[in-house]
Length: 115
Length: 114
Image 1 (cartoon, rainbow over the protein chains, first blue to last red):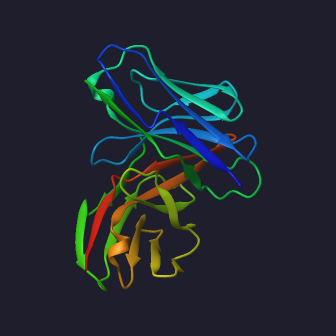
Image 2 (image 1 turned 30 degrees about the horizontal axis):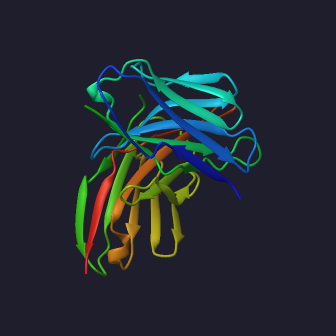
């Protein structure tokens, strides 16, 4: 069966510090990968998605970047965090190829607090 | 960013009541309309989904009603239970090169009183 792992689960960082959140998927090949951010009491904002290694589409211009160095690994980064980067970051994967279902499978999330 | 508008923001019902959550979209290229359920501190999980060629879909106590001409869809929870208390997100998905992209509504926080 497929599983998705995110870490760290919780992170408290000072303004101006760097960030690296990692996500890995097991049990599937060539997944579509996504990073979403959920601000307190708000919806899920799509930040980045990737259809393959090294292929990143950015949805919202901001202080963050994403990379996909391996097929099942997706990394969210920042060189200098802002207070507004605080939130709940969710990685998700979707089936690529085969019957189109459009279903997303989410990780447990990483809660980032920038002080 | 393409929008999906969701209402209400929050909803309180008695056990056994039928909460209804509404969503509207703009982009007619969307071809898959899922609802996700999220419990505190967890990632969302797919609850039920519908395609635009169908007007209604039922799975257990959950029903989606879809109005393609109005570009609206809604979630009904029959015989709601305290365990249904969660945040519900509607979403709309569009295929693109190599995959698909999903846009979410702002979410509805549902509380079912015992």
